[in-house]
Image 1 (cartoon, rainbow, N blue to C red):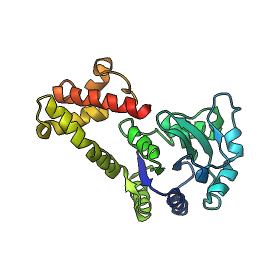
Image 2: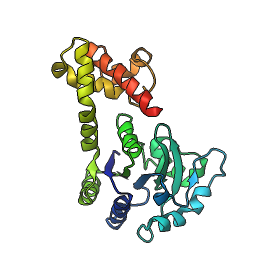
Image 3: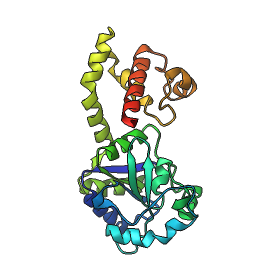
Length: 253
């Protein structure tokens, strides 16, 4: 199961998209909405905390759905999750904050059941940073957990209909914004950026993976060998990785 995501500038459009997905037959276990917590989207939510009593989240599901104006009968669970490097995020949906690996006991048994039954496998580690970056920029996300190719196409159609930016487009725009600075840095080292850009970028993005954050390349050698077997030990990859590591540390601050 691979998430289908849309990035929205407006939290209201993200909500309308979730409504349409519900009407299109997607269940609450599949549709998840994320907002940077601001005064205009602060809802009757609860923090994820290991000190909360299990099952608290289920008690507020109806209130959260009503507060967001979601379609009738589309019961959702809402929590306020603190995502490192991003800040407080309102996560709405049965999987909710679990997709980011930050769900605590307050999420209640519904999330645990969803995970146990394979409803969600989480966000791929090489994509996680780009979801976080969208939230960091004040954008909202709709993430659909499609079970097959037909559902993936239907979810994509609804999300695109509401004018969402795809994750791939957001990812490319992000790199374009960095490319000139990275080219200048790499050229200063005496290397050919045009020739090595693809490998350099792979190294840069590798440093943003959940498993690699804050670690130098030598500390994650086994993982890098697995993910990038053909390039992990090249100068271009390692140069990109070092720069990505610095970028992550600045973003996290």
